[in-house]
Amino acid sequence: GMRTTGNASLDNFRADLAPAQANGALATTYTFESPQRPDGQLDNVWSEQGGNFKVANVSGNNVAQGNGSDNLATLNGVSQANVVVQAQIKSLANGQVIALAARYNGPGMTNNYQAILYNSNGTARASIYRNVNGTWTLISADVAIGPVAGVIGSTLRFEVVGSSQKLFMGNSL
Image 1 (cartoon, rainbow, N blue to C red):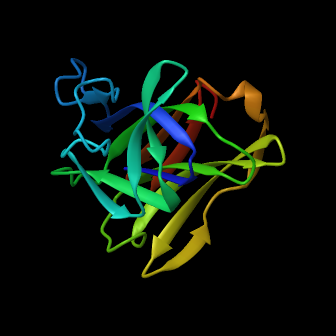
Image 2 (image 1 turned 90 degrees about the horizontal axis):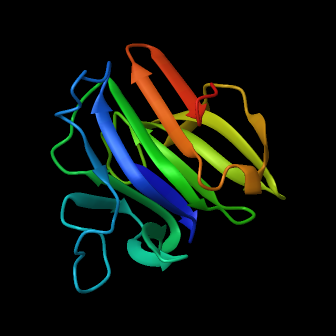
């Protein structure tokens, strides 16, 4: 799944089984460019678990953009323990969050793992959290990545396999 706070936006969302299949036949990249619903909301392959997303045009490109204070959407019909989830960062203003969710069990924002990228006064920071019954626990270091401008257009990737969770920005762990 994907999560934003405020109107942070992302594109090219992809979820794969982990380890990823050699031919990629089980994966689909969601570009948000295909015909969307007339009301500007996400296609019906998504379920909004909290908040709201809209499809917005950012610099001539349709993206999934948060449309509430805290937004979480998951792909319908996906229930896998071992996954690779990724998306391209399109916008991330100060104080905003973009996260990728795995092992979602709900309801709402609860019972899942999230790889979180956030803007702290112009510095991109990343961490991994687990939520169990509404309690968030930091399960990785909170790491400074660098200037936010340097992550826009980059791919955030979250690999969850067995007891391992890995967060990548581009190809860097």
